[in-house]
Image (cartoon, rainbow, N blue to C red; front, side, top):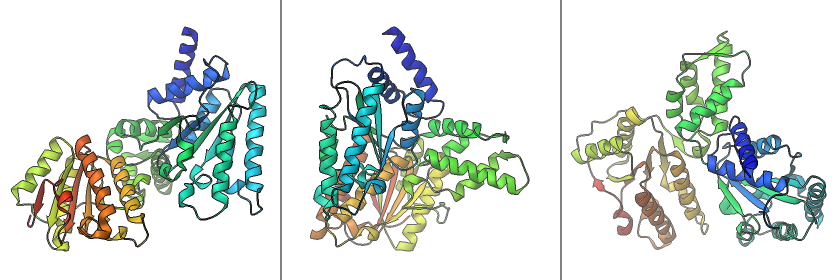
Length: 425
C-alpha cells in the first residue's frame, strides 16, 4: 500500500501542473481511478457515477481529460446531448444503450472505462418540469443503464462522469448514492488559485516573454474569474502586444485587458466601475464601510431614498470599499425578477445569490428591492427564498456588502436581517 500511496501522490503532483483543484478532492479521484484500474479496490461495488458541477469555464471537462491522460486510461466515451437526440421514436434511447454496451466491452478488456456526459442537464432534466415525451424516456433509460452497470460485466468497471452548470435542473433520481455517488463542486478559483492558473497559462505561450508582471495584483483584481476567463484575459493581452509590435506582455496589458473580460460567474449581471459621486456624511454608514474593509463579513443595509441618490450612494460605498479590497461591484435590478410564471421569480433569486456567493468578497446593489421583498401575497415564495439566503449569509459570515434600495415598505421579517435603514447619506 505504501507503493500505491506514493504513486497517488506522484499523479496528484503531475495533474496539479495542469489543473487547479483542491488536494483532498484530487487525491480521492486519483485513488478511485487507480485502485479500480489496478483491480485493488476493496469490495465489489466501486462508485459508478461522479457529478462535476459549477459555472462554465471552471475546469470540469479539463479535469476529466487530464485525469484520463495522466492515469493512462483509454479515451473516454463522450456523450453530448444534441448528438444522441433523434426525431425517431426510441432512437435516442438506443444510442444511449449502445454507448453503455461499448463501455462495458472496453471495461472487460482494460479493467476500467470512462463515460463522460457533457451538459448532462440537456438529456436528464427534472421530469416533473418537462412537457415533452422524449426527456422522461431518456431519464428513465439513463437510470436503468446506471443501475445495470452493477449487474453488467463480470470483470472491469465503468465510471460515468456527468458535467453540468445547473445541478438543480437534473432529475433528483440521478443524484442519489448508487448512481452518482460523488458530487464535486467547481467554484471559481480564489486569489491564490488564480495566480497559479495564470502561471500555468503563461507557460503555454511559446516565444512570449513577460515584463514586470505582478500576478498577485492581477489575481486580486479578478474576483469571479474562472480559468477560461483568465485564458481570455491573457489572450487579450497578447493581442494587444502583437498590435503594438511587441513580443512581450506587461502588467499594464493585463490590467487594461481586464475591462474587456466579464467573469463567467457573473455574466448575466451588471458589473460597474464604482465612482466617488457623493460625500458620505452619515456616521453609521461610514462605520459600516470601515468595519467591512477591516474585516469582510456579511453587511446588509437598506437605502430608502430617491433612485438617483441611492445609485450614487451605493456607487460611492463600492468605490470606498474597492479602494482597498479590489472587489467587484455587482448591480442588479429586482424588477427583472418579477414573473407571472410559477417558480420563475424564486429561481432567479436563487441564481443571483448563488452567484454572489461565488464572487465574494464583493459589493452588491439590488435596486428596487421592494419589487421582490414586499408583503404582497404573490411574493410569498420570493420572500421565503430571500429569508433563507439572508440567514445563510449571516450565519456563514459571507463576505458581501449588500445594499438594497427601496421606495415602499418591505416584509418585516426581511427587514430584521438588515443592520440599518438610511434615508440620507
